[in-house]
Image (cartoon, rainbow, N blue to C red; front, side):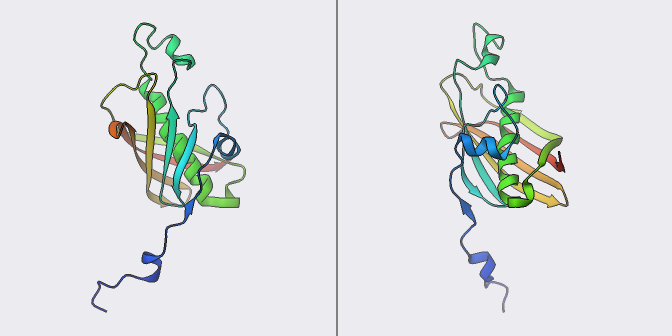
Length: 162
């Protein structure tokens, strides 16, 4: 072998999962209104990546105070949307072993907010698992609106029993 041949595992089709609708998301993670921030999760590849969708509506309760005359989605909630998308990826990746587990933030690094997210936007959160060691998972995420990056961050989470 000259090092250029791909192994069978490298050339196999990714472990792609169907779209998670809101009911499946609610079965996967414990978040509920008003803090459930992901409407759908698509393009899930177990142990690799996921894309979450957040349809931003003027009816969101946080817009009452952020800001009444100029509604902007708070950056911390964009980060939380990233975390919830990652949590669905973790649950899908762990399969039956995920029952009874919670995903806790440990670190958030290099968070950047490039453009405000406003009512009417559809935010697509692209999450990629960077590393997994034991019960600690590291991710990088980009939030996009109309294909343009509006926010990004790297973060780590610990997976623990309830």
